[in-house]
Image 1: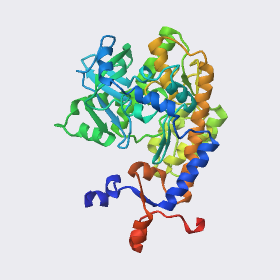
Image 2: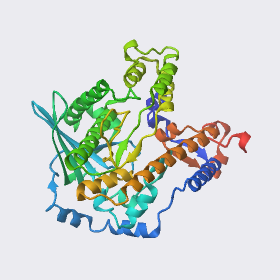
Image 3: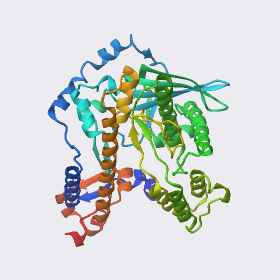
Image 4: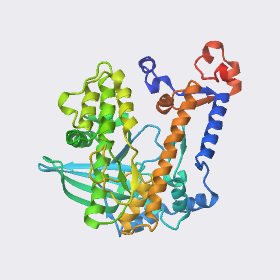
Length: 446
């Protein structure tokens, strides 16, 4: 760790957030209470773990056997981009272009090859519905022994994937062709967001040309979405995040359009209702009244564009207040077996999830529907359950972060820097200055 990093206040320079064993105990007690209240399973049943371990056996022989039925894309340059602390990698991208088109490949880990109806892991995934992410603590939807190995697109390993290959017109950015198929890929590198950002800048770095080309496409897709009226609550997203977000949105859109318009089948579509006109007016008025914020006069009739404009022009200190004003009136998105009603925030007529089958039941089920052209008989119940469990997970995250604030801990700092527990013996040996840098239970709560 360099002094320059520490002086700059970077996560690398600051190191992990350090807490005492007493604080760690308080956090563990709060997690246990919340998990019990919201019926979140923190341990996997033994039969699920046994099945998961068995599915990790003879991996390479199984992949080799699958080549007869899949497209071999192992020679296609591909890479993943994830947070520095990511434990599994379920999506990779590849890019190419000519004078008239871009070709974007989004490769998604073929989880449904290993987890399918009738299996113990499928039943457990239906119980959990999603992975719950708390600062420095994760409750997985799928056993890590599977999710972090054969279902993870780790670099320099052959992996089974579900590929969405999209030919995109350079001028209109519309689909010229979409092909969805099972594949075998070989990821060349695992990049963090920071590393991806650096590759764009460094002309002699590996993947430099590919990262720049896919950003060229992603930036245009992002600007087109905004122009079409898609709500963008985080206007300052960096280039690496833009690449991942726009690539995944385009792939999700391609898959759900295929399911609805080409096949006409039910699936787990993502439907986001819109606020009423009165609710939008309430939000816009609250935003307009913020100090230093102004909504362009001609945009009041298009609330999403009005919010985008306010976010881009407002002082940074008002960003969170604008976001809260919008989220206060915004109905919850939910899963439904048909897409009608669309996704209001994205301004998509049809939308659904496909790119995160390791952490979301909806994506896993859509993988199964795409591959098997078969719809689970209990699809409506699955949609309702996934919507309810998503809400529970978000509530648990909010309440847990509130508890952390009571202990003088910042969840975002822990997400950025990690967490380290200092044992009692080491803490007792420290002088007062050293102890000041370690979070203890506040005196009012002792």
